[in-house]
Image (cartoon, rainbow, N blue to C red; front, side, top):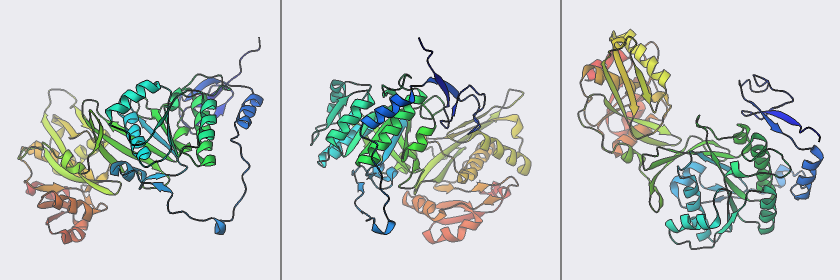
Length: 454
């Protein structure tokens, strides 16, 4: 019996190597090479040619190509449409990733419900559930006004034939880790299978004008399982995030060829499906303590929308030789940097204190404008003095203690005014632009000016 041939793939970039390497020569990632069996080339080429996907492309002149304005499908689910950049783009391939049980399938089934109500042909393909199980889940969402076609299948060759025959407008594949091609010897979910099945779905989407959503589970590191090249192949990457102990979910775009990235949509999980949260700031600030030291309200920008958040900090005397530092929802190293700036520039003895910083509400934010509210929260907890009521702050803090300007200051202040806040502490360079909103503006240029605000 002939020995099974194998090849090594990089999980990060998809690079191939005939032997195992400690570091990928293409993307320089360490310990990312995995071994996968490989099928004879002639068989793979024959399978792809037989599927009818390999159409001959003809060059077209740019001036002769007509631009269509109706290339998006607006679902009416505002949070979903916003994250996609205004609606579903025809012939696009969209990856929806998230932890198991977070609600990815429920979200896409709700989108399918809206689409069939618009009299569009939609095919829902599941490799994890039977059609009866999907029916049970669909019944929880309410009555469907149109007919949604269901298919329980894992063989991609059969799926290709059905999609080419029926030519639906939208296809959902749940999940990519369960799909396989018969001509590839590797098991479903392996690097080879995920890469080849995604490539085949990409050709389907572009060649036949079908919009395809593929569901992908994430690893413990928080990235989609399989090769990282999967994210480079698709048009849009959405992550559905949230804590299983909380009812709220955040849909975040990390890649979008047809819209802005870092847009977020907020949903609430209920017994009959997901409900849109159209005012995330109000939800994030629910239960905010009044007059408590260590609590500071800030305005952050997610994509194109301002969202109000509460930053909480707690400084207490440590009983350890090395003080403890904990950060939830923000960059741990950034918190350590700001603690060092406070100790150096203001002379605070923070090396004798444990410091805990938290973004209330379960959001994860990575923006320089959170520096000033973190500093204010730490100072408030350290001095045991609360910041004034109806006050927000935002700004970036440098290593020398200077407070730098941030983008979209006007939009942040306008959001604060809408929610009833009266005073804004912000960088001096942003003070002039923000003064037109009508709130009390306090411009600061150095962290040495912050102590007088308590």
